[in-house]
Image (cartoon, rainbow, N blue to C red; front, side, top):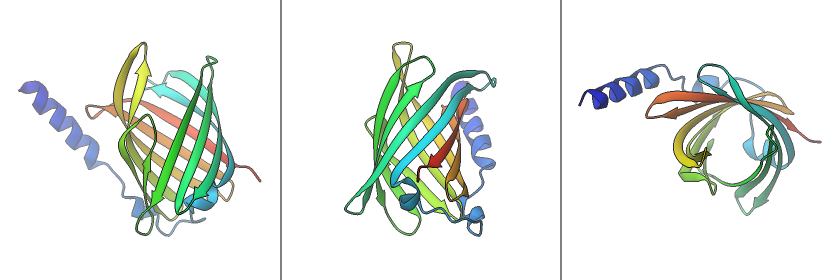
Length: 174
């Protein structure tokens, strides 16, 4: 009972400090998700434990294309330890600024909402670590800095407790 109460209180504290994506509605340049991710995009990032220790760095090559009204992102990851990974996102636009997405290692649907220069993207990821698979919640905040550069800060939680952060820089290839 005490564990349940502590988890509930932690979740409440985490949710109290959230900024709504519409806070950025007047910020420019405006992020057009489809326009930014169609074509080639390159990204560099790192994963940090909650202590701040960098445990993994990575490079991503992304190729985005439209299939009907859907946006497909084919992502190829190369990690600092030499491992490689591929993730294919299928994103579906909903009402203004809202996106739903699926990928092979995402549990259920991802939910995104864009306003102004920002996109908040939330999902549950099946994350393999040392022979086990954990379901972790990701809360990505992406900000368009100029028409070619997007920065992403992701907060990774398990049971409402932060376990790490991902920082990622995207560059649109022209």
